[in-house]
Image (tube, rainbow, N blue to C red; front, side, top):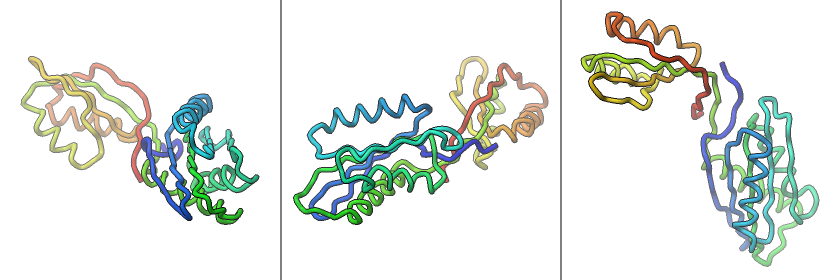
Amino acid sequence: MLLYRSILEYGEAEYVVQKSRFIAHALPVESYEEARSFVAEIKEEYRDATHNVPAVICGPKQEIQWASDDGEPGGTSGLPVLKMIAGEGLTNLVMVITRYFGGIKLGTGGLARAYTTAAGLGLDAAGRCEVRDSSLLVYEFDYSYISKLQNLAADGKFEIVDPEYTDIVRTGIRCMSEYTEEIKGMMANLTNGKALLKREEKGQIRLKI
C-alpha cells in the first residue's frame, strides 16, 4: 500500500544566476525534529552564506509545513519552495537552499524563480520515490536453491537482503506487503517446502519514481 511520496536520499545541487550561487540541500526525514536539526547543521556548515532558506514538510498528509525567508524579502524564497514541494505531493523531507549573493539584485520575481529552480534541481538530485508498506521474510535453506532465488529476484518483485552463508543459507527477502503471500508460496515451490521461515517483519520500502 502506498503510504506517501517523498525523496529517496540526500541530494545536493547548485544553480547560478546573475552571479548568485544557490545550493539546494534535500534530505528525507521521519519527523519535524529531525528536519529542524538538519536545518541547524546546514546553517552552521554554511554560516558564511548570505542566506540559508529552509522549507519543511512532514506527515503522510503534509500536516506539518514550515518555511523561512531567512532575511530575504518576505514571500520570495521559503514559501515558494514550500508550495512547489507540496504541489508535487511530496512529504517527509527538508530542503535548505544556501545563497551566496553575487552583487546583482534579482527582484522579487527573480528571487522566487531562482529559489524554486534550485529546489527542483535538489529534488532531482535526491530522487523522488514512493514509500510503501513492506514485508521482510527471513529464510533458511540449502545452498542448492540460492542461484534459482537470485534469478527470480531479477524481475524486481522482491530483493535479497543481507544473505549469510554458513553451512546453510540464511537471507532476508524484502517485498511490498501485497506480495507477501505470493513470495511465501514461491519459496515453498522453489524449495519443495524445505525452506524455513524464521522471522517476518513489517516495515517500509522506498521505490524510485
